[in-house]
Amino acid sequence: MTKTHDKANKLFLITGFLAGWFALITQLYLIIQNNQIPVIESLTRYFSYFTILTNIMVALCFTQLLFNFSKKESSFISKPRNLASITLYIFVVGLVYNLILRFTWQPQGLQRLVDEILHLFIPVLFLLYWLIFAAKSTLKWLDAFSWLIYPFVYLVFVLIRGHFSGFYPYPFLDVLTLGYQKIMINSFYLLIVFLVLSLILVWIGKRISKPLLT
Image (cartoon, rainbow, N blue to C red; front, side, top):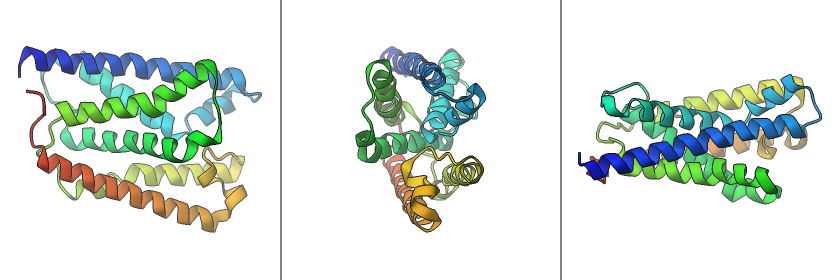
């Protein structure tokens, strides 16, 4: 690897580290500040969003890669299949939000800035990081199916918690409005989207066996 490669890699990591944690911490502040509900419930709702959980995953990934950058040693999070799975999850965050949810509300001021970072900037940044810097040659087609575990577990969590609390973080998962039959249909389509995108990532990984910038 050249010095140019290392500098560009580190710039991506620093940008993701700063932007990711800024947006997550600010969003936590905003959700506590703006909701007229107990703090514990605000915290629970904060961690009920797929966007938040996945952005935390991405921020931790950027953090670990940045602070272990000079060691050049492999870690759990830097393994090709794990980086690819995080890429998948954050890409779905951006895709679903910008195609479906963006038009359901109009955030202003600081909330709009945070919104754009979490749903647009970070997804694009991490996708580019994966395409340019991540190792991909060892990805297997079966990996695509294992990557469905996280969204499936999330779905089960949201439905169980929503049954007892009445709170559903996304309108397409709102059982009170749509009913269980419609939610199951929506969930099936979402899992198909996850699977198709997973297979595409594996295909890209097999086509791009080395980082683009060397």
